Image 1: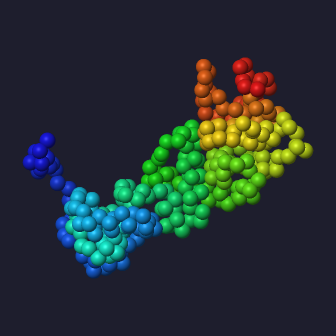
Image 2: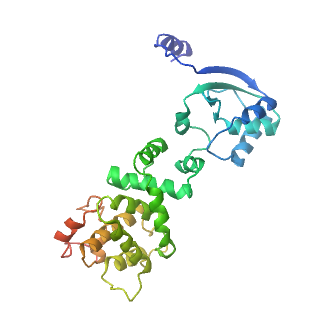
Amino acid sequence: MSMRTITKILDGAQPVASKIQTYICIITPEIAAELLKANDNIRAIKKAVVGRYVGDMLLDHWALTGQPLIFDWHGKLRDGQHRLESCVTSGRPFPTLVVVGVEPGVLLNIDCGAKRLLGDYLAHEQYSDAKSLGAAIRLAYQLIVEKNVTQNGYSPDVMLRWFSDGHTGLTADLAKVRLWEKKMPKGFTRSHMAAIRHYASDIIDVDDVDGFFSQVALAVDTIDTRSPAFVLRQFMTGSGRNSDKDRLQVPDRIGATINALNLFVAGHEATRAKIVWKRGGHNPQPFPQITPSVMAEFLDEEPEGAPA
């Protein structure tokens, strides 16, 4: 399709009333320095990105593209800090499209060279331990909304809206689980515990959740070796997992933890076969949910064909 055809199609599209203004202009180092005073970006300047852009500008390889500098209607720079910083550093002007007057809420939807993460926004909003909080939000969302844990990515905008709409208590969950973090099996993080605590506390007594995590963290030989906490710890730290290939994946860790928590609350003893989430094979199981009363009804005996 030719450019003429594209413009003809767009000429026939319905216009939208908007206060957004656009400019195509040359940004000099002096102008760039002034525009950087309006920077309100959630990401820190990344030296590697600036270095790459500076090289292109010094070699006169910077072309006019459709990627704009973006300012919101409050006059804050929302996208383009690396390009402006590179212009100042290189001392070379560059041509660009500039868009002024966008809605401030588009911040998380802008796609550019240095990817924005949920943790970047949380840090910008001055949440402590933003990286762990972002991970806890993603996992809690999967447990509560998706009813499953996968390695799939989720839009930061979706995660932020969900967190703000009734799930800010995750910050308190994250603070609480620090009590046990240092003694937890390797690979089981505070974000995992915070997400599970947040998910479970709407279904069972949060004191039971805390009691369970406390036992997992402190599990030693003096504890009943058939207790769910002890069996879970042994499962997570089992021998034969010395390579990356053999290490448990996050869904396996979370699934086993939920099964063990169910058994703990139901007052049942545990075995490895009872806590392992069987997600493959001829008879795969759905992802475990917090259902201690159901667990109490059918886990008195080992399931057929369960691993020892």
